[in-house]
Length: 77
Image (tube, rainbow, N blue to C red; front, side, top):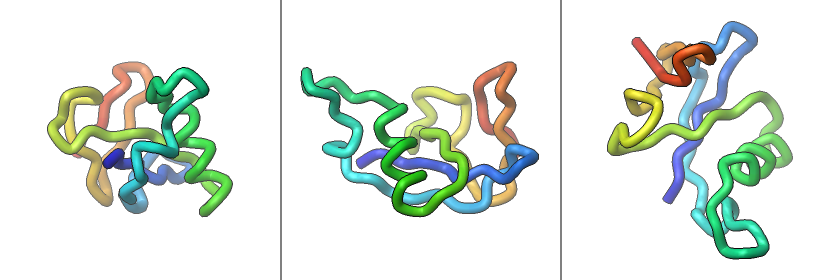
């Protein structure tokens, strides 16, 4: 399962949701974050970034109140 964080206009995390990995697969079966973002936006609106439960990328698993830093491409409390 993939996790996506909803961001407000200041890049503060409002909530984190779980998305089935199949929503991220392109025509070649490769996961693409942009497809997951589009799925979330179409379903719920707003701006979304993928977050890693194991912190494999973007430094930390996003939580409510965390901030996404687009320069460092990471979530921080």
